[in-house]
Image (cartoon, rainbow over all chains, first blue to last red; front, side, top):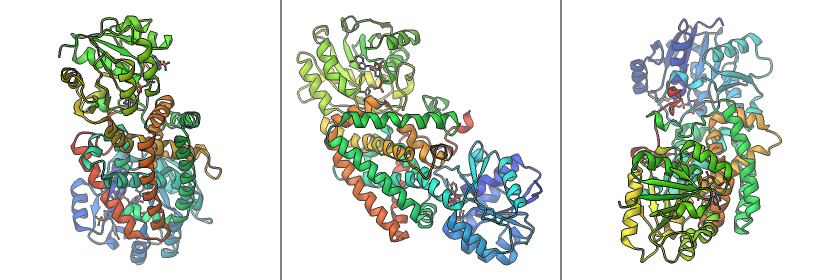
Length: 301
Length: 301
Ligand SMILES: NC(=O)c1ccc[n+]([C@@H]2O[C@H](COP(=O)([O-])OP(=O)(O)OC[C@H]3O[C@@H](n4cnc5c(N)ncnc54)[C@H](OP(=O)(O)O)[C@@H]3O)[C@@H](O)[C@H]2O)c1
Ligand SMILES: NC(=O)c1ccc[n+]([C@@H]2O[C@H](COP(=O)([O-])OP(=O)(O)OC[C@H]3O[C@@H](n4cnc5c(N)ncnc54)[C@H](OP(=O)(O)O)[C@@H]3O)[C@@H](O)[C@H]2O)c1
């Protein structure tokens, strides 16, 4: 890897984690950072999320080999356009946005003279802001790169090596396919979680305090997901509209079938589905994407 | 508490955890146990889930002050009927079933001469069987008692004190109301999780291996819930059919509204819902029903 200077634009959960991970796993690499909000910049400096926090974007990117946009996907196009003049031609451009087709196009249009290698580290928590990041976020997680056809292979190799150095496993994918895969594994789960938490908050016959008290029966896992950043997720659904609606249609069909099975007291249909779904869980644990300890680490407290 | 002997029928996750919790928090109380499966009985004896594992149910309950049925809710009626002759009249009858109206009625009918105090500890994991239990399962969790009108207040007090000794917080509730509350906080979340995991397993344009690899974006939390025991959950949906269908109807309405907001690119509607849902999460963490650490304990490994 020949990247020596990384500029991080947006110093929240993702930007902060990238900065901290570089400090831990690539200590020879210098980092600069910028965030639109002065409070975030101050907190980022206090936590040392990057080596130098700049008060304007142009200074942050001035000498960068790699610029990573870590802002909500709906803001990436504007931010890239504003900084275009300040970004050196040598700099590779990347991002961490959760939807990729719209973002890849926006980056290519805003920065036609730079190599663009869009990235999505499939790692996150429901927290956001400059206090949320931690260096191990990407360890053992996949990072999907979606370089447009014709992208300089050296730039792709550089960005791959960068993410591998932070502990991630890298995979290349077409942007449109990424958006379909993530609609299933991330966007629809978030949409459903937001919905059920919303439904539960609005009931008359069950109080909100009951919902909170008895959340350990399954609901609390949904509230964790539904506590994710509203701006980030609004942007994801607006930029990945078609794949999300397509997958939502299939989910709704399956839910209707299950509803019918309950209405008809078809215990066998319920049992069959509930049995099929266990295999996927086993594979996820085998592949290190989750934790199977019986107490989920509760005993560690 | 004057309970000196507890008989546990069904030595899986819940039965095993009750046994281990008694050994830890009520060491003066003697425990006996029975399970329909010889393999489970053997494993239960090896792990010491109860003081004495009996090879037939009648011996296990012979001298019990408290009998707790820890079998799937669909099996409780049969098991109670079979054991009725062997259960002493002094014994208080309880259970841990996840739905309560049907179970309460079945227990009262099968054992008309005993005090019946149905219980539901709102605590669990997706694992099952004799290796799944651990003594801290009930700590800081709510246990809902749904004694029918006219139940001996002393029996209710005994069962309350018992669960409190195991670390739980106890609440009394009408069985029908319990079933409505848990439909929202537990049954519908499980149904939705089973559905989305089923949907994701059956796609042609996204492979199963992709679903597994990129599950850290939210999907893996659903697979955890959808790995729960199929028999247990089939029984829950069959015994709490009406409340589940009622709540499912409300969820579907809300999901349709969100789908429309995405189709119309109504970012404000999405943002508003995604903001509202954060408050509930905060309350759940404040009340100790979940863990807010940024790495969810990953750093503990
Ligand atoms: N959260 C996840 O789990 C996750 C996982 C994978 C990828 N991602 C992607 O990562 C990106 C960042 O998400 P995040 O979770 O890190 O969100 P975050 O914690 O809210 O951080 C985003 C940061 O960007 C700043 N920002 C917003 N607009 C800006 C602008 N025009 N110029 C400069 N800074 C700006 C925000 O500033 P303020 O201080 O003004 O808010 C905030 O500090 C998103 O594209 C998201 O899709 C997120
Ligand atoms: N899992 C949760 O998160 C959770 C939470 C709260 C309440 N509950 C409730 O707890 C109860 C037990 O669930 P669990 O999670 O402990 O399930 P589990 O781990 O599968 O244990 C159930 C045990 O009952 C045994 N059993 C089944 N039918 C029986 C019968 N007729 N006579 C004697 N034993 C029989 C099973 O034997 P085999 O060895 O033959 O399978 C199994 O060992 C259910 O009513 C459930 O609704 C569960």
